[in-house]
Image 1 (cartoon, helix red, strand yellow):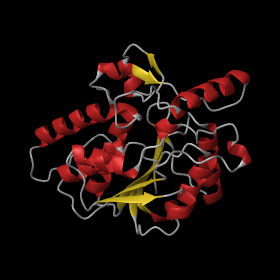
Image 2 (cartoon, one colour; image 1 turned 30 degrees about the vertical axis):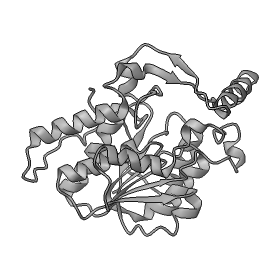
Image 3 (spheres, one colour; image 1 turned 180 degrees about the horizontal axis):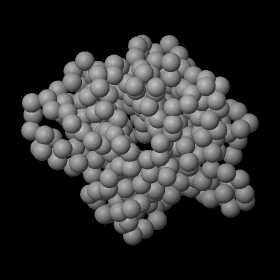
Image 4 (cartoon, one colour; image 1 turned 120 degrees about the vertical axis):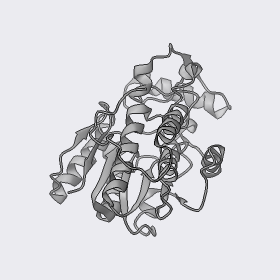
Length: 289
């Protein structure tokens, strides 16, 4: 199903279970979460494109009008495995849009911090249907880890309207496809028998929930907030809680210019020199030194 481009996929953990069966389970899970196993998921959900221009505004108005009436607009696309591996399409049947390579990277980061004893919980900021966090919980369960939590931080009602000038033109706040309620995400965990006391929810805008969140330490910090403001809010609130040896993963670094700008500015302000590593042409990660 595609291999990660990172060096975090050399898994060597063994907690007394059947490693072959565990790996098969996680491969199957990732195929389900990304829709890779379902060619019919290539009916692509159309959505309002960020940016400027007359056609962009017309498209946005038309699609939001359909959504407001309870319709979804799809374009029939041939199933292309490489697109799904790289998270380059928006499948209609899936729990995550990040693709297989980013799923592999996430699994590799988790298993690396477990192997190396890096302390802390795991969090994704911007979870949509919860697929990446479902994988987090599954990896912990496979390795019989019961002293770490998985945190899901999201408004659970879509993206916020841009409040900074830099994010103007990237307004997806009216796009209902992105608004997945917290109970719907809980139900997704239940379908995979992975909802338990180690799955924690932080509901609200990042600027309101993250600074005062009860999270003590993090071993994996995964950002998927798209906008400059959202990305900066997460880094400002949570990066200091990321343990040395932990991983910061940025989903939209190459696809959302404002996200990249926030990351680059934060790293420059904090003097972060840990090398940025590529995942799939869209997402990147680094390990905190």
